[in-house]
Amino acid sequence: MALALVSLLPAQAAESGWCLVQKSTSIGDQKIWISPSYLRIESKNSRTVTFAAAPEWKVITYSKVRKIYYITTPANFTARFAFVSGTFNRTNLGALQYIKGEIIHDKGNTSRSYRPAATRENTYRQNDERVWNPKIEELEDSNLSKQSMIILAHLYNLPVLDGVPLSVNVTVESNSVGRKLRAILETTAISKCKVETGKDPSLKDFKLCQDEQAFSNANNDSIDLKDFTDYIGPK
Image 1 (cartoon, one colour):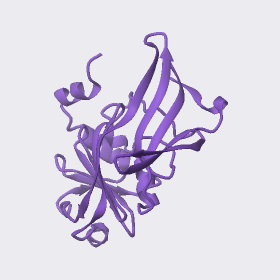
Image 2 (cartoon, one colour):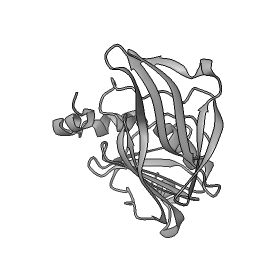
Image 3 (cartoon, rainbow, N blue to C red):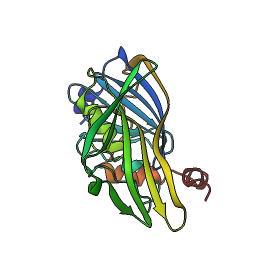
């Protein structure tokens, strides 16, 4: 296993890419570095790092706090480790069919909006809420790998489209809150940058978890009451 792991760790290098800071209503704050051959996600709430690199694109997630890690594929990655309770639900937009919308040019960035393909498909119920009219905006960069886009889509439970998710807005309605717009994903900072690889620990002293569920269970044991309160926020 040690030899297999070494083959998955990227060598030290740097290439042009993007640095993003994002906020999600379901999994909190992320810092993301993405380039044509590398993706790295730092998740503040779960205190984990996830990375993947060409050519294998195996997804490795580790926790320095617990000294544990696991390995999976982009297709099987679900980021369940980001949740501190099985009772939390992510807004499920991944099952809907989308069509391309307008192209947006902003400060040197090119992005595109996406909306559901048909009106009858853009409504569903989650808990006591009716959710409809989702709008997804994604950064377009033809140099980036589709594997990175799959990982990021699964991170936020979104459909796999043709870019890097930047923002997601939906309309929600319930008896308790009425009707309102909700930003379930927003990018608070984005810039072009040099993305450096090969800076993660070797993980040779970390314990390998069998799968994502085992990693999630072990990692969430390390989150104390203050972390939990900060995560769920004020009512």
